Image (cartoon, rainbow, N blue to C red; front, side, top):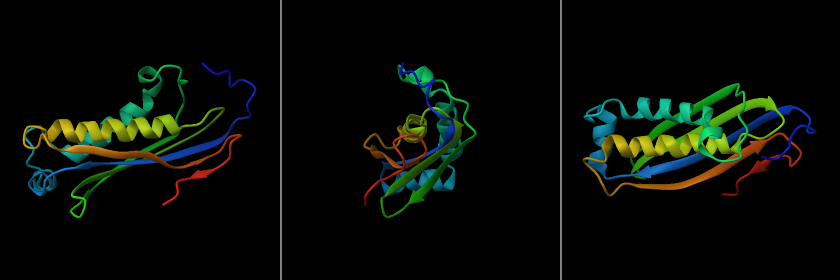
Length: 145
């Protein structure tokens, strides 16, 4: 693990996004709440929040962090077609929260897939990436495009 003991505590924030592409019929099941496993978007939101809190247990050499905010939002996008997932993570500390935001999005996407895979095995999880990060020595980052 990298020694962050000499770094100043600063406000850290990261935003990540991803998407689950699926058939229009699958979107209808998610939107109408007819998935056999239950509320797809609510369950995926909770899974993403839980994953952000446990990132250090999932990814070797990540620091355990005391996060102050985790927001995971899922939105049905008929034009995709599928579900867009966005996570925002904040804290004040000595290391960034990019991995926590990316983990939240990844696990939320996997949860969407798991909950409706019985009706659509062709779903694709795509485009998981960091949108924004702020705080720390390396400064701010904003994805282009």
